[in-house]
Image 1 (spheres, helix red, strand yellow):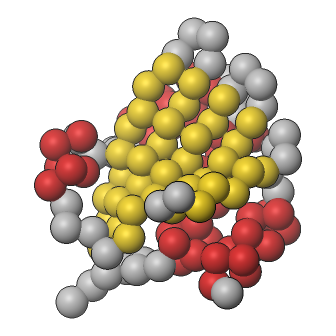
Image 2: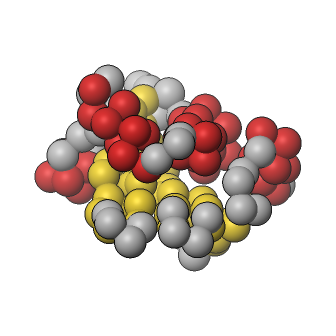
Length: 119
């Protein structure tokens, strides 16, 4: 049986404050989810000229799922990303553990966090 993850993406700015949900298979640890799913979203958000472009891209590619499906998913691991666009703050969390990133997360900073999660 494939390992299932649930990832909540919270995005806040002066114009937008909401969240959306991602559910998928193949990653059963927080480190795996960060390395293979959340890192992509963090980097896409950080590199988007405007947050709306990132959000439209997620919708266009059908990456998100409904809140009801997210809540009904029997996931092996639940994680979240929080992005404060106005203040350029990024965080990844699982349970009560929160990992904050610099003003724009980098691949090496994310890799370092993956290593911390694996230990």
